[in-house]
Image (cartoon, rainbow, N blue to C red; front, side):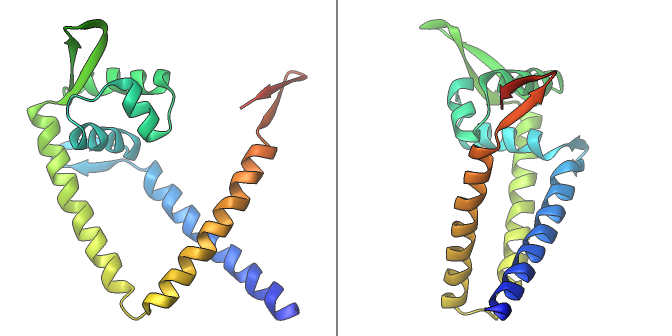
Length: 166
């Protein structure tokens, strides 16, 4: 039993290291051609590029963000001239989102970069069997379920003596 606990501790330590590296990577600005963007901005552009004429409501659902957060991102990307909003002629309250020419260039450059990263990752995992990779996926899914429970159970903040749901 002790060995299993030790291995579990090592697994969580390794997970935490991976999380920290992903967090650092996502938090830093990245250069795409002449444009410097944060990952959240690029992910938003990617979602629009993958789904031309998408609405804020749909993109919010896809990205798991609020419509308010997506509206802020739209304003930021429109200001950078990477995204355009086009009013839906049948519903004046709804706008379609599309990439500008420059936004499309960045989207394509990012797509190329992602493919190179995926290839590098794939090559680094070729020594693992399919069974080992499937076992990893199973372990990660089990961890994700526990992490989701942690989020659900601890999703309350103390704000000036009042409990507020996240």
